[in-house]
Image: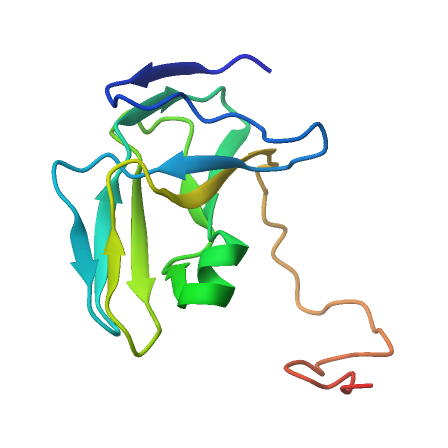
Length: 144
């Protein structure tokens, strides 16, 4: 799938690191380092603008290494970039650790996954079909 991109940063465009990668790393494009204090959040710009085809979204997701090692994640994960959005891609980072975290220009801060999606048409009904699970949710199937 070809996607139009404008890159106003001085970093390479996002790319897949391996043949089996689902996501491409997004890099911070900021004039100076930003320090996120514990529980602080900020929108980190990337310098990237994209034009997606209708029926496709870009999902902004956390990087597992930043989450596991530093407690840094994407607050609205996954963030959705719609096909009609033309603004700069920004990443809402949050520091869930007990230590300040410094975001540097060029740092890989999130990953971008391109995904096709369907549009739903609602069919208003009075009842739904029965299933074994029924209304059970939030842990109803057990832990083991």
